[in-house]
Image 1 (tube, rainbow, N blue to C red):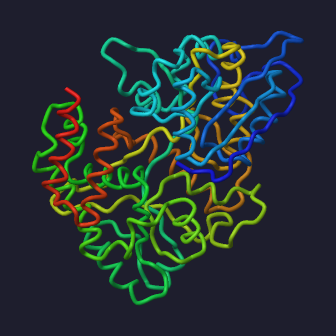
Image 2: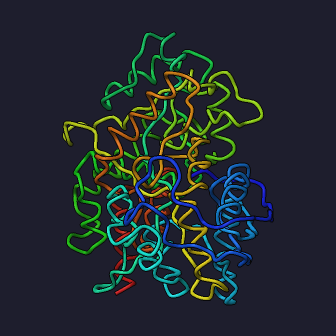
Length: 444
């Protein structure tokens, strides 16, 4: 997730009809888009989200308006502000035509305000439209649907892995490789503690980041167990979950995270600090490759072609899985309001951004990993940038098994709150686990 700090409304004017999908993406059916706007038709599609970032969204709009004949009125928010705006507009029946969503908790919260999208997808890409998406994206798109409800209320725009990033220059100078085990992590922090850069920068103020770090830990300790707790198959007080919360606690008690970690936000503070070379490691995700977007007005030396950065998976936990576990899925998904003024036109915009001309523009900026196969940046600026892209797309993303999201918004909040309490010493792992169980019991 990349949080944009400036809200902007953008309206451009499009000219022609919807084209076939751009790049190498499959289109299904006869290979041509099935969602076309008749010659001479025009209309406005409103879009509100926190992602993609403003600069990228404006480029997408220009390409998609030329393909669909629509005018697109877009507003990009900082993520917390967007959540407030989304809630306000849903309550007043003024939801934008196309909205940014995350799977699970956020989509389910607004499911009744959204139209099912499978007809839109089939009309555009054909009956086999699901074949062009990475499976984890479609699995998560329906995450949390009530039993018997097979609708897609959102479709993935971008996907990702959550992982860690290293400043390869700092590690090289210290003679270190990215740590693969917990013991290697603690040893690296000890070694790097003698330098000027923060060894392990943890922006723990953000609830989403606390949760994704915890999910990487929990799935290392006992793969898949945390989701069994959410589904009610086991209690949150299960010893394996308490142990995972204990390893989260050790990030703070063992001095791995920096002092004041709970007060540091990921964007802009943590990201700026890491890009400036002031930290050796940070937990983020595949989206960090967007720092090397060649269309940026100025690129810091470390980010140019990803020269100074290297992704790695969360270190394995003693007694847990012997190999790192892959956590990730949808970065941002798109939904269409049930009250959209022109659902067909909104569908044309949404599908073009996923697998059309707008999608190619989006991926050219390295904003994150596409949701569909076969779409790649048209140009790489370095061999390292291309290697990292290939690592995400060809090796890591196809192996993602565990979601970075919870299905239930109340559980999502309860976990984040419990982790914050542990980080500040206000709760033990046992007490934190019980607080999550209490939140789950309250929903029954």
